[in-house]
Length: 363
Ligand SMILES: C[S@@+](CC[C@H](N)C(=O)[O-])C[C@H]1O[C@@H](n2cnc3c(N)ncnc32)[C@H](O)[C@@H]1O
Ligand SMILES: [Zn+2]
Image 1 (cartoon, rainbow, N blue to C red):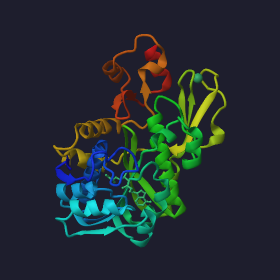
Image 2 (image 1 turned 45 degrees about the vertical axis):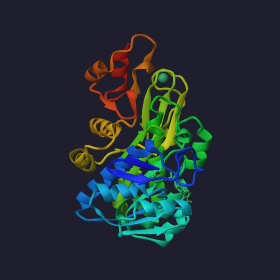
Image 3 (image 1 turned 180 degrees about the vertical axis):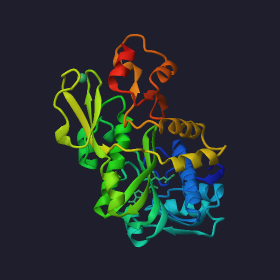
């Protein structure tokens, strides 16, 4: 059967290709947005570095991601595709048969990544959590290289299963209105710590949450001067479920037991990354190069992210958290609270105004 995505056509052996992870060759059309951003980010990275790229797709499935990069850009020097399933590699070879600058492997992703090194870009797109592949991917990436990580175990880091998040990511999630952002920031913190372990630094350059997945891109660097500012951005968010007050903390011991505003129990999430999610250089190039044929949702994400990139608070608000009365329209909230929309939620807004001003507006 023939499918289309972006500018490409490709073959898939069966129709139920995204039923679950047991299928022989996996393809999820909802991940077109994820792949749009691989194309956009790699274009931006290639422009910033002024060079063509050696890239690795260690969990390539049908090969659609690399096929799109090869057809939609001219920035690929060589692509290395790997999948643990032989059937996936067979289909990827068929889909990419027009290209000579592609090499195929059929191994566990970790073995592939430890054996093959110095990639300019590595894409980690497993079923569920990426945690088991980060150490090998960070080792395998060139210093100065770009890595893109997908996590689809969003429920585990979003507050629904706090003990699972603590076990898997070493962080306590928060069951709050901005849980998507907490989850993304926990994933980013985890990746940063994996790099610290290996004496490298991962600098977050672009990330987002969409439907069931989280996506984060980092540049790999080395050196204490790069590590300190990133380490300083790892901390906690304290949150009052009663009055909705929230605050950033660097140290767990500094978080009060009771809400400083209303005196109720004060919850917390973390450790998580509290710093900027976006490098403006990447954002501006992506917006300029913005491809006309990418998914409508990708364009919406990109434009909304550009707006919210000016806000530094590591959370967003929803109007309905402040009581059940008449909630002001989002457009009025944006004007009165110097706020922006947020890609995390269509009903959400972001602002750096202080909590009391926000609360007063809703009163
Ligand atoms: C979510 S799919 C990847 C989808 C693909 N990147 C895309 O954009 O369509 C995950 C893939 O990882 C493969 N896989 C699972 N465990 C693996 C492992 N340990 N090493 C290598 N590949 C693995 C699966 O066979 C599957 O093809
Ligand atoms: Zn309170």
